[in-house]
Length: 79
Image (cartoon, rainbow, N blue to C red; front, side, top):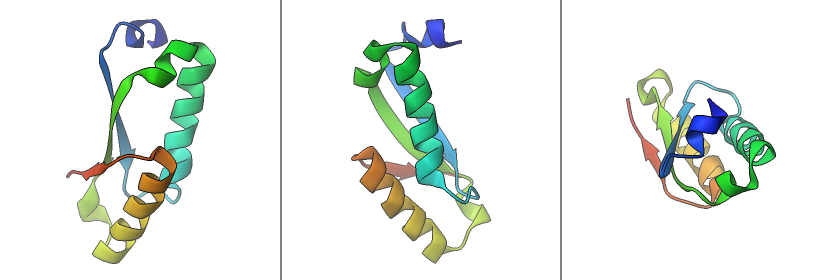
């Protein structure tokens, strides 16, 4: 799986909105990718929070802000 990712031009991270720690979920994946190959840390990435209908609007806003701070990029919300 990770060998295949090296050939991808863009990575899309999909984080479950119902997770208690969306920021830690993102960092876990980033750490795994970077541990496998330092080249993966420079890949273009899109970060999404999925299943937004599973949390209330206030919680979603809070989680989106956490993730924006950690990822340092725009976070897309999808359902």
